[in-house]
Each structure stands twice: as C-alpha cells, then as structure tokens.
Length: 181
Ligand SMILES: [Zn+2]
Image (tube, rainbow, N blue to C red; front, side, top):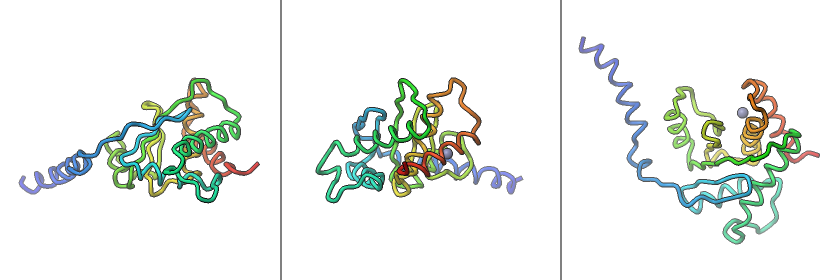
C-alpha cells in the first residue's frame, strides 16, 4: 500500500514542481510590442533584441539592431507575415496574433505542459484558441517564425481549419521557400 502510494504521488509531486517553479512565477511579460499583425510579449528588453536578430537572416543589413532602431522588430515580423501570405496565396482579413517569447526551451515546455499537452514540447507552436505563437528564443530563426506564422495564416483563412497533417505540409513549404522567389 505504501509502495503504491509513493508510486502514484511522486509523479504528481513532480508535476506540481514543474507547474509552479518559483523563478517562473516571478517573471512578468513587459509591455507588449506591437506590429501590424502581431502583439509581441517578452520578459526582457534584451530578449526582444535577440529575437529581432534571430529572425533577420534573410533581411539583415550590417550594423542594424533593435537597440538602434526600435522599428526593426516590427519591420521584420511584418515582412515575414507578408511573405508567408504571398507564398501560401492566402490573405485572411483581420489577421492578428500574439507572439510569446520564452527565453529557454524549458520555459516553453512548461507552458506546453500547462496547456494540457504531455508530449515533448516542440521548439515553437501555434495555438488558434489563444491566437498565439509560443516560441523558445534560443531556437528561433526566421524559418521557425515563418512556419508558425503559416499555421496562423492557415487557421485564420479557413473557416474550418484543415487537418493537422495538411497544415504541417503547407507550413513546411512556407518555411522552406521563405526567401526564394
Ligand atoms: Zn507546424
């Protein structure tokens, strides 16, 4: 009986520990950063700067940074949205979503778990219920962001969103062809 109790309670305690880490509870999102298509949530100014650098591969000009040009993140996010819409040839009206930047994959994994998924968290995901992209900063590239934006565009475009597998093929296509004309 005691053994069974331990067997049941240890994973449960571990889950509570995962869901309530004291450091994460103390973190708060800064005032969000607005672009035409997205409201971007981040914890530290430097996270937004790194995010902007990470998504700049296809758009980079020497010496540009979010610190020097506060419009840079907006320009980059909106350019990627425009390209994804063109690649998919889908132009949903009222396209607007949130982007949550988690500094680490662990932080993102906790969010994924808290949203009810017990599988291993991907490096980024889109949830249409909350109209939000959740991503781990260290894994973010322009391709990763384009992939998740494609999920957002597809879900806004179709009244009944297509099956997951079909969405995945379309999102991978958008990611792969992001900067190819
Ligand atoms: Zn996907």
